[in-house]
Image (cartoon, rainbow, N blue to C red; front, side, top):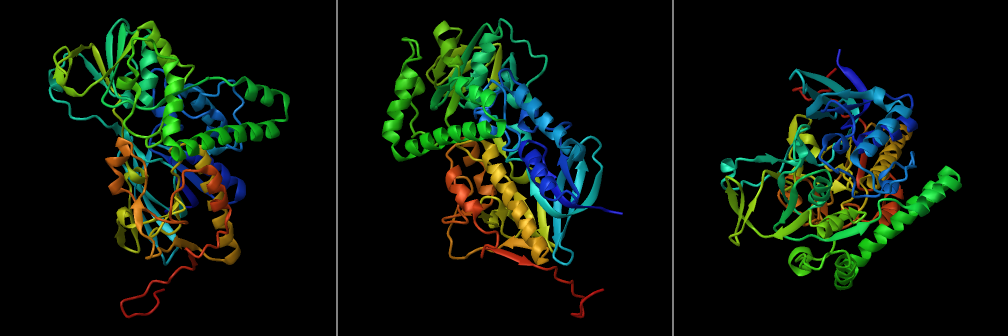
Length: 495
C-alpha cells in the first residue's frame, strides 16, 4: 500500500528542520517526514566544504528561535553551524523522521482526495516509489545542489593546472605553496581568499570583474555573550536577537533610503583597513548602490589583514581567456596560476527541480504568483520557504512555519481539507526576487511571480513581515474548501 503522511517536507537543511519542529510541536499526533536528496542533513552547511566556509549572517538570528545560539562566535564557521543543526534535530527527534537519498521528481494533487501523490527517486539506486501527503512544504531553498555556475571561459581546456568550483571542493586538494587565483567577488570569494592564504597557499589573487560592497564585523560579540551567560537564557536570547535585528534592518533601511550617505560610510570604514598601495576606486567601489546586491561580510577583517601582509592581492579586470599557465586578461596582463577557483556563483532551481500537476493538468510555475512569499496560486496545500536576501534565512523560515501551523489549525477547526491562494487579476506581476545579483538575474524568469502589493508582494523587512504574518489566516486571498468528488464520464459522482 502507498504510504500516507499528513505533512511532507522536502529538504533537511535549516528550513526543513525548522518546519519539522513547528509542525511536530503543534500537531504531535500527525505523521510527517523530511525527504533529503543527500546523505546527511544540513543542506548548505553540509554541502560546502571549501576552506573557511562560514555564514555571512550572525548566529543570533540565523539560529532557530526555539533553540538559541549560545556559542561565543557571532559569525560561525560551517562545521559549527552543522553541529548546531544536528544537535537541534536530535534534541527534538526530528532526525528520526529524515529519509536520506530521496529526491522528489514530481507531485500531483487530486481535488477529489485532497492529497498529493509524490514520486520519489532514490539518488543511490535510481529506483522510484510513491507516497501521498495531505500537505507539502518545499524546504529545499532555491539553488541547485548538483552544480554551481561557471562561465564558459575560452581556452579553459588548455590550462594545465587545476580548476575547482567551491560547491564541489575536493577533500584532497593540495594548495600548499601554490599560486591560486580565485575568480569572483561575492561572499564565497572573499571568504576563500584569506582562508587559502592563511592555510599555506603560496600566493592568492582575488580576480574580480566588478567590485562589491564589503563590510567588516567582529567574529565574536562580548556584549551578547555576557548577556547569555548572566541572564536567563530565554530572556537573553530575545534581547540579543532583537539587538541584531534592529542593527541589521536599520542599516539596510538606511542604505536604501540614503544610498549616497551609505556609500560614503562604507568607504570610510573600508579605507581605514586597506594598505596604501590598494586603489580603493579601482577595486572596492561598486557601480551600484548598497544592497542592490547583498553586502559581503568579512569577520575580523581577515581579508584586509591578508592584503596588508601581501599574501593576497586583488585584480579588477575582465577575463579574455585561459592560457596553459594561467589567465589572460583584457588589459593584456597574464595571471600565472597552479589552481583556479571559480567562485562565480550558483545556479537557481525552483523547488529542487520537481514538476507539479493538479487534477491531471501540469502547472507551469512561471504562471503562478506567490502569496506572502510562501504559497502559490494553482498549488493547493503547498507552502515553501525562501529566506531574506538582506538578513538571516531563518527569520523568514520561522514566520512561514508559524503561519503554516495556523493555516492547518484553521482547516482543522473548519473541517476544510484544501487551501489555495486565489490570484487577484488586478494585481500586476513583478519578478519573484527583486535582486540584481547575477545568479538571480540568470534564472528569475523560470520562477513564480510576485505581485505589486500585499499580500502578493515579497518584503525584505522582518519587522514589516511580523505584522503581515500576524494577520488572520482567514485571508480573502485564501480559498478553503472541501474535496471535490470526481465525476464519471456520464456526469455522475463516481464511487
